[in-house]
Length: 263
Length: 143
Length: 124
Image (cartoon, rainbow over all chains, first blue to last red; front, side, top):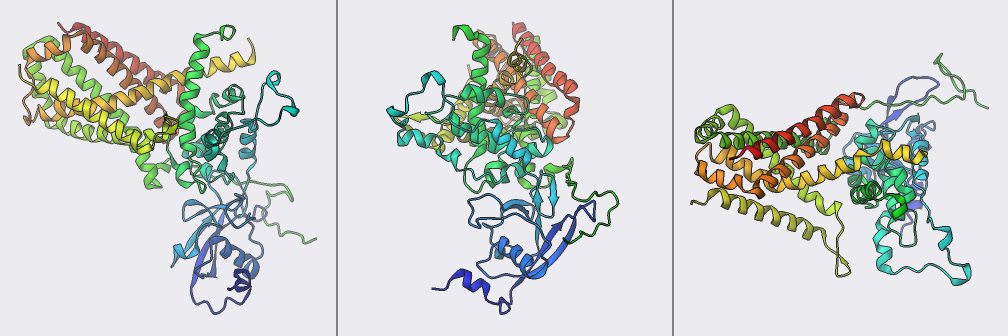
């Protein structure tokens, strides 16, 4: 059985299929705008876009900057815009785009730091803002000696889908609302909030509601649905958001008509 | 340390200058799914027109048989007909997209299990068929 | 007033507007296509015989028809107002004109609903 790593480290000269990559470059020390650079890379059947970029970095142009890590679709680092669509470059086959050329740009809707690297601070802050941890009422904690909070498989299935997010930001790149209104909290953050809201062990729904009901929260979403389309892990953030809207609306109405003291 | 080649006078060494790309006013033309989304949203304009049109009809009924006949005449004018053809198209588009999205927006449990999305969509379409049949029967039966 | 009360006051309308939008979306999807098909195409073009004036009076004068009609109009117009407002924000990127847009959209919906109430009340 051929070792894939060994096969790749052998010379790729015998591969006659090549493909052109048109890659965005942005080097702030020498330019104000992005430019495009083309590279010709081999195109074996089993190569993904990331393999092509690594070939460029190893053999052609070491100055190309981009993020990647696990190369197997779980770390969420390698998201980029490929021929106009947000994709995980480790999970997209190069041969899909044959005969090419393939346009590789940084993930849309994020500021570009350098070449294909985008600034993700805004996304990280938004994730934290929804308090993505189990929140429990201090008075209702049971002592450690009483053991764990138990959950049936059905209860776990209620939120499992929303726990599969790998924070790859493809959904933010696809969402036109986030592109137009950068203060929008965004699909992944809301899906993450739902992961905890729907967890039977969590008691923090009201705290999260305060964040999500703000103007830049869920109400800006118009159910375009692109986020769900591009998600590589089938999290269905659009579904999470729509389900949450009804919940949040009912909660908000309750708080008008029933003052806090009587609830 | 390798000194970076700095040609741009406005750049300060080691200070990041992020490039923010603006979203074009025509972003909704850049992908078929974006265009479909905007058309779906625009269908709401035709919902509003339908209400206006039906209120004009009801108003004509209120004013008497002559007014009602005049309304039917006016409604057969080419401009009005064209507008209404387009409107019916958009109303159907609105209904179809709405019912198809319903399963994504609603999770219903029955007997301890999640109702499949297809069942939710089918129930919506069934309700649509029943409502349509009922209204048609009310308006079309004689006597 | 606490900061939380402040925040609640600022965001107070979105939930109820969304509920009206959703209800309007369902009602308009269920009822409007057949109504416009009949009154906008089939009757004017003579494909189907239009109901007589007397028949329509009988139908529309029923209290259920009056109330149902006002509800249908109100919810459908608020559905339009909410959706169109966001289409203007996102499609044309004129969110900075939000005061004007909100007044025209929701004001229009309120005006239309009042007109519907008037029309349906005036049916003899």
